[in-house]
Image (cartoon, helix red, strand yellow):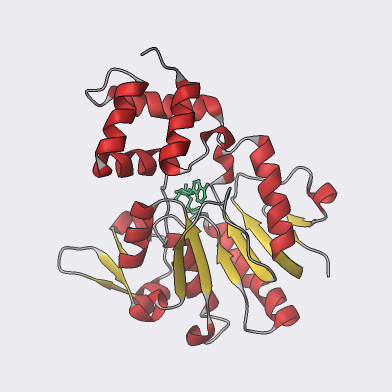
Length: 260
Ligand SMILES: C[S@@+](CC[C@H](N)C(=O)[O-])C[C@H]1O[C@@H](n2cnc3c(N)ncnc32)[C@H](O)[C@@H]1O
């Protein structure tokens, strides 16, 4: 059967409900072609047969295409601004029962970072983070909460002492006290209905893989999901070009507020 990438995208959607049309095509196709070239499969049809039959191959495919690299305190300057400015302002406006959403949380490094950082401002048992990701393999690691040295290297020493413990093999385990504050959920940002009245939405290093149309739709949905005065926090290399048109106030290149 002569099949092409268009056909493959359709089959992927039927199988996984992941809509590859929403991701930047050149980059995504290149990744998928590289992955297929590392298998015995001769083309999209053979590879599709494989991921239909073999659950491990299917999970490998989803994990590979969703690119779930993450780190605790990734881009430290952003977290410093969150600590010094964003969080005090949010507490001023809304009090300490903040509704917080880590929208593409990957292996958990980001929502656990938020808990640690907020624990400087709010009693830890009052913190609640909703954390979504499309990738079940990344979420399994997030729930386990065990990390390599490299992933936790930027955690400030006092936080490391308080909330991480080193296991005999050298890995780092996040304390139950921190884990309990995060509610992980498998969800696709393109399909799942968004919640309402959130005070802080953190969405970093995922929309860079999306087409301009998909990105625009998601930014508008975040705007609707925020309470007036709420904040959207995006990645250090990202920006919302049409923020004014959506209705946001730009506080910095990565920090946008919905007017009160
Ligand atoms: C590079 S990681 C970013 C993790 C974290 N936000 C950070 O900045 O360190 C991108 C994550 O987005 C997730 N993702 C990709 N497409 C998604 C979608 N449609 N819905 C939800 N999550 C998605 C991937 O599974 C991956 O875990």
